[in-house]
Length: 247
Ligand code: ZN
Image (tube, rainbow, N blue to C red; front, side, top):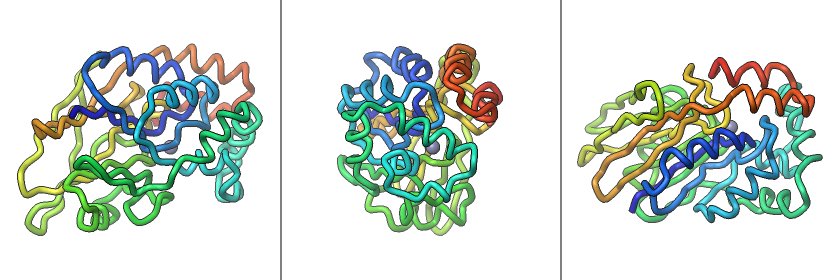
């Protein structure tokens, strides 16, 4: 089975459509690691598109906040403005879909999905020390996580943690990671709608577990068009600016 692994779409419909178009026919099933909405200008379009794709899906911290399941005070002031705006925009059926998304971890078909860390959906996994729990405790040799909006991840073999850093070439391209037997992986497909790893292209992965290969994709999209919709919506400037910087 070839899985298209999406995370942190963040209500960016232009990035989502560009990514789906770039890999049409290359996958059989979608998995989504949460943060479908918030930050971006298209919460209804993206929620409906995701719903129609019928993914194996877990919630992210922003889905939880938009649905009113967490205290907004945990967010910085800019994020709070976006979350309130998103909540006000979502049609009732879309808000209901976001609110019913299950919390991770979720395991099946040879892989495990989490939003933050394996232990805590709100925890950021940036460094090897944060990755140990997921690498050692997950029931699957391959676990996908999101939340940091950094494409890449970590490996574990014979007591050693490795850092996996990939940079696909310019244009719609992927870098391939060959999975080694006896090695465990904690991998981040990157963010579709708000990359923060210095590459503004939309990020996602395709996991081909039959052939033990993970493709880490980057796809350019019309960032200016999204920024214009954000401006029209009155979303905070720092959120608009960061799309072009990829940070
Ligand atoms: Zn996110």
